[in-house]
Length: 454
Image (cartoon, rainbow, N blue to C red; front, side, top):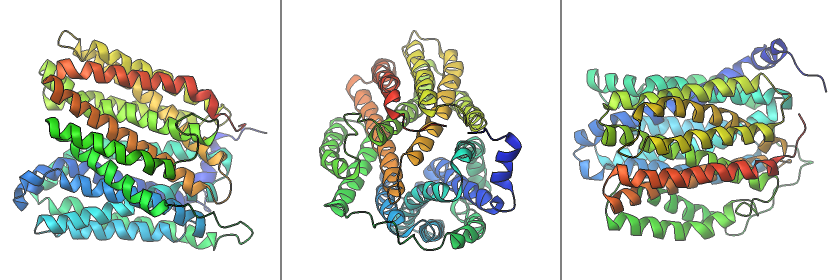
C-alpha cells in the first residue's frame, strides 16, 4: 500500500468534498471543550449568584449522569440508524441546554440545562467517531484524530481565562449563551455531509438487542455520577458512597462493555480497556497536580497550572505528529504512549512528597502529554479499524464509558485517600503509585490491540 503524502492527506481533509465536514467536526469538539473548561471556572460565581453554594457539586453530577446515558444510547442509535440524525439532534440538545442553563434563575433550571448539555455531549462524542468511520478513508483517520486532539488544546489554554473575564465583566450567563452561535454554525457545516450519508445500508443486519441494556445504562449513570459527587467530598461518608457506586457499576458495565474487557481479551476488548487506563491515569493526575503543587509546595494556583498547559501542548504536538505518519503500526505507538505516560506519572513520585522537587512536574507532564497524544489517537484508529458494520457505535460508546468510569473511580479514590491521610503530601504519593501501575499495565497489554496493518 502506498503511503499518502502530506499534501494528499490535507486535500482529503480540507478539499472541496470534506472541508465543511472537517471544520464542522472541529467546531463541535471545540465547543464542548470550551464549555467543559469554562464552566468549572465560572461555577463558584454561578452557585453564589443562585444562592446554592451547598449544592456546588450537583451541576457537575447532572452533566456526568446524562453524559453516560447519552453515550450508551448514542452508540446504539448510531449503529441502528447511522450518525446523520444523531449529529443534528445531539448539538440541538447541547444548544438547548446552553440556553436553559444560561437563562437560569435558580438551581433547578440550571440542573435541567446541565442535564441536556450532558445528554447532547454524550451522543455527540459517539456520533463523531461513527461519522469519521463513514466519511474518511482509513489512511486519513490518523490525521483526523490528530485534529480532534488539537481541537481540545485552544479551549484548554484560553477557556478558563476567557470564562473568568466574561463572568467578571459581563455575567456568568454568557459563558453558556455565548456558545449558542457556534453550535448553529457547526451544525450548518456538518449537515451537508449528514445528508450525503443517506439512510443505513439495508444489507447490513440490525445490531442485536442487548438484554438489560436500558437498565444497565441507568445503573452506569447513577454509579459514575455518584463517584463524581464523592470525588468532590471529604470524610467517611464520601468513601462509603464511592464504594456503593462501584458495587452498582460492576454489573452495569458487564452489560455495556464488550466481553473480555477485564481479561484484556485481544482486539476490541483490550482497546476499550486501554482507553480507560489512559484516561484514568492522565486525567486523575491532571486533577490532583494543582493540589500537589499548591497545597504541598506552596505554588500559586496560576503557576501550578503550568504543567497542565505543557501537558496539553505535548498531547497536541504528538497527536499531530502521528497523524503525519499513517505508515506506523498503531499498536506499537500505543505501547510507546503508555511507556511515556508511565514515565511521566512515575516521576511524580519525586514531586508529590513534602521533600519532592516541584519544578520536575513541568517536564514530566510534558512527557506524559506526548504519551497521551500517541496513545489516544492510536486507540481511536484501531477501534474503528477493528469494528464491523453495526459495531462502531457500540464500541465507541464502550471506549467512552471506560474513560468516564476509570477516571471517576480514580479521582474518587484520590479523594478517599485525602480524607484518610489528611494531607496531600501523604495521600498523593500512594495515588501516583497506583496510577503508575495502571500505565505499566497498559504497556504490557498494548500488543493485544494489534489487529490492523497500516
